[in-house]
Amino acid sequence: MALRARALTTALICTLAACSPGGLGPSSETPYAPGTAKGEGVDGLLVGHRLMAAGEYELALKAYYRAAADQGATVDVLSAIGSADLKLGRLGQAEQVLRRATEKDETFVPAWNNLGVVLMEQNKPAEAARVFRIAYGLDSGQSDAIRQNLRHALAKSEKPDYDPPEDRPFKLVRRGVGEYLLLTER
Image (cartoon, rainbow, N blue to C red; front, side):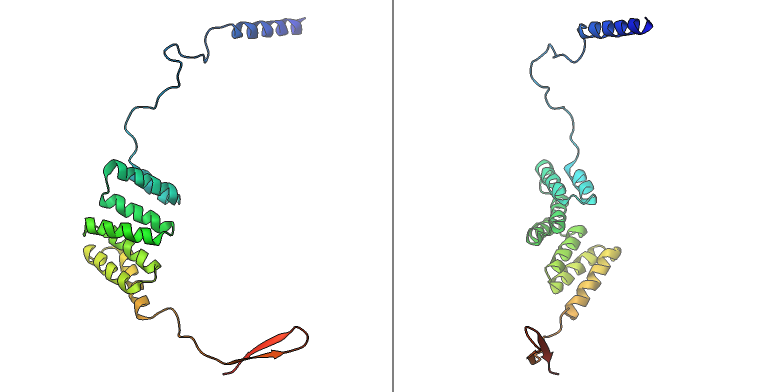
């Protein structure tokens, strides 16, 4: 009997709840979806920096482009775009953007350093050393990273990574069916 009373009470509560006028019904103000939230957006440069730290370089580049649309092509924005292009392996684009940044502000050390890194990636150590010297001078030698980059560029420009090819004569000797041995003479 108690079980029957509970079932009847539960069914009655569910029925009455379905008849209530509250809930998630449509708003009486407008039949359309709500608009966008009004307010101040987050700085695209800050978002881009956080995305770069997270390894999301493509999304960071988009955030930097939004920052360029909002703030204009400042030296900070151009340097950030160049850094994102560098991380994405777009060395030609990174070089162009970073050169624009150094033309816009010739005292902006991060743009000079990043340009040097791009030039090193493009295997242009002599020009990279020149750029790192500029960055090192502007920074007054306070950054260890720029000093290391300069040392690396100078070492690479003084001694190339490769040795000249050696012309050694060789012989191909047959050693059975389908088996060959390549011998070099000294």
